[in-house]
Image 1 (tube, chains in turn yellow, blue):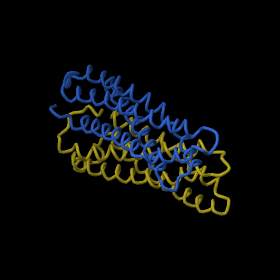
Image 2 (cartoon, one colour; image 1 turned 60 degrees about the vertical axis):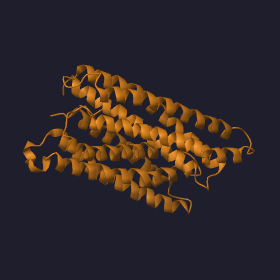
Image 3 (cartoon, each protein chain N blue to C red; image 1 turned 180 degrees about the vertical axis):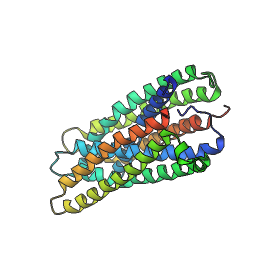
Amino acid sequence: MLALVRAHSWDLAVFVHVLGAMTLVGGLVTAAAAGIVGWRDPGGALRRFSALTLFAVALPGWIVMRAGAEWAYSKEGWDKVPDKFQPTWLGIGYFTADIGGIILLIALVLGGIGIRRMRSGGGAGLLRASTAIAAILIVVYAVSVWAMGGKPT
Amino acid sequence: MDFYDWMLALHLLSAFSVAAALVLYSVLVVSGRRSSATLADARLLFRVAPVATPLIAAGSVLVLIFGIILAIDSDRFEIWNGWIIAGIVLWAILGAVGQRTGAYYTGVQELAEREGDASEQEVLARLRAPTGAVLHLATLGVFVLILLDMLFKPGA
């Protein structure tokens, strides 16, 4: 994994970044799985579980991943390289992380409102939308992982 | 992207597949240990768990295959390097501990799926017992050790 030679001073930052990214992807997979398994359930317990997982696992994972990315970016000296000379894979990583963060925020808001409306018997549609977004985000971050690993130019 | 880059990308995606399954199991283990959990909650959680099975099964085999291909193809590393051997040994330990964890929770699932609520106390007691959680924590610990080994490459 990550079989690249790099100065050991960067390793901790990359470790934090990867650990956060794994937690984020795991949180998204768990949320999507619970939401899809419970898609047609009348009670909605799994849809609620899905939205809560996004909040309790995917969101902290995204924060750690993004903080680790910024730390690794500065440790590896990319902040001193002009934008036009920065590699494509770095751009893909930043784009998917930030766009993914905004989409995750939308899923969290939809999930939050959905849980609130569940108390009065509604909210199923919003919770399903939150699940669908989580499933889309898995694809977005799979592309990101591919770009971080393969480093396309 | 050349052959090595593709193998590295697939190696990383396989590792993420294993990680995703471990996070899913972690969420289920924590949820199942809640004091407010009921037999119905446990049954719901066990409906989600099978999603992780193909992720961890395929991911753990593919991560090793792509890792070995990378070690053979690389000009900088050899398969007998200490950190690569350590990674393979830790991978085997992860498999062994993971299997024990899986066997424990499969037993609880079978109990939870039996007809009637007579087994409720037993199911909840087993979910809250430290055995499963300790086994799962050990699995997570070994996975983090593999991650540290792969990133820090001690001795490389």
